[in-house]
Amino acid sequence: MSESLHATAPTQFTEAGGVRYAYRKFGRETGTPLIFLQHFRGGMDHWDPLVTDGLAAKRPVVLFNNRGVASSSGETPDTVEALGDDLAAFVESLDMPRVDVLGFSIGGYVAQAFTLRHPALVHRLVLVGTKPRGGEDEGRHPDVTAVATRNPELTLEDLLFLFFEQSEDSQAAGKEFWERRRRRTADVDPPTSEQTTQAQARALEDWREVRGERYAELKRISQPTLVVSGRRDIMVPTVNSFILAQNIPRAQLIIYPNSGHGSHVQYPRLFVDHVARFLDAEPAFS
Amino acid sequence: MSESLHATAPTQFTEAGGVRYAYRKFGRETGTPLIFLQHFRGGMDHWDPLVTDGLAAKRPVVLFNNRGVASSSGETPDTVEALGDDLAAFVESLDMPRVDVLGFSIGGYVAQAFTLRHPALVHRLVLVGTKPRGGEDEGRHPDVTAVATRNPELTLEDLLFLFFEQSEDSQAAGKEFWERRRRRTADVDPPTSEQTTQAQARALEDWREVRGERYAELKRISQPTLVVSGRRDIMVPTVNSFILAQNIPRAQLIIYPNSGHGSHVQYPRLFVDHVARFLDAEPAFS
Image: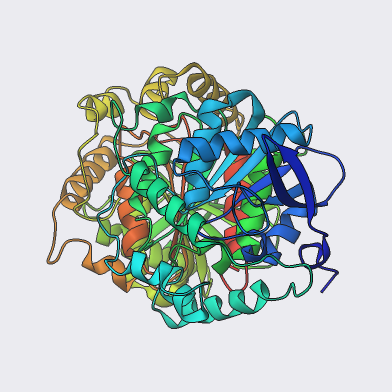
């Protein structure tokens, strides 16, 4: 295995709007940066090194903690739109004229809000295990919220339930991801606070509300978009990815077999190949 | 452009079960052959050279006309299952122990029946613009059958209506495909007969009937499968591809933007990259 930049890239800080944002930037010096937007309660340490290092091979990769999350200062706001505006402030503070965005779960909600509110900042969009405002809840497991919040940080057991199918292969892939996720041991984030958990939970609830015509705002996302999901996502039901790709005008959909919310970390090499192919094509989809 | 084997590969013949099957084989000498199964009324000349040549770069590619179609002898049967059995006879006549199968539209129905009835012959499966037995017809354009049968052979106008979205980009891609599709000018097929048209039409009707528990037989397809569709397919509604990928245990789904039944010829290079990535991974989905 070559050196993992994910494990060694130093945490840096930038100021914007009175917040000190923590971030890590690594990979190629040139090219459109790809910003990663994390799941509920998650921080920079919780990505899959195979995914971040894999994508960093051909572009700058930026991990960051949004306002109030882990090593970033401030209070986490409680709407997805406010989270999108904070992301815009962060992007502008680093003088990045335009970015690619990879949003996972609530990070995918933020990616959509960010794109709709700050379209000039977004080049291309990767939406993983996520859903539109007012999306479908049918297929969601009733224990999801309880398991996602029962421990100060997600345990292996929590992850195996929330992110993977109950099949032997998927559970085995989950354990491998768990090992990779613990590979960074120095300069790591503190746990996410209770304030962040509560505010993000309110943002999740607010995202459930339909506003105006259902899914109409998706038609205003003009960026090339790659939508990715596992086949049986018990947190964000898979049909939401079908809906995203049916409504975002320039969206391609990929659904992986035998997988759930964490399909991208169950098939990290395949996911990296698909995302790199998508980000690098010029024009898109050629 | 390098030499097109699609344009120059000679038509060959093999005998099985009293039928003289026409086929063309080209590309790499070694590796699992990839057999192409064509759409309603279509023959070997009607594939996209960018797709066949593209995939032939890393494997043997086999185009063939099933029983009764164009340059193959015999009477076309009128059930999908019989078409699958004829394919098995063809494969065995060429001493191919196991094949990859790419089925488009009715060719995808045949690919499913072939896999269910002759599982030992099938390595991996690519299902494009197709549907399961008893699939969904909602979203099908009422003029599809009339347009698909109104001319002795599909015209450019027919194709632009049936295979592409009514957007400027999709229609332009359709015209480019039409030019590529006419690139082979020597040793071409005769038109498909009225007998084949009628028999395939009856097979299509029969495939509409649910037998037993709807979609249950898909669970018996154990081969790694790639399901591909355009976002708005007016011939075989797109939701059928979602259903296939939800029910075939080891299926990955890809849906392309701004495209219809011919999404694979609208994005031929992207499609070739995705299919090659899928066929070559070992184990599948890694």
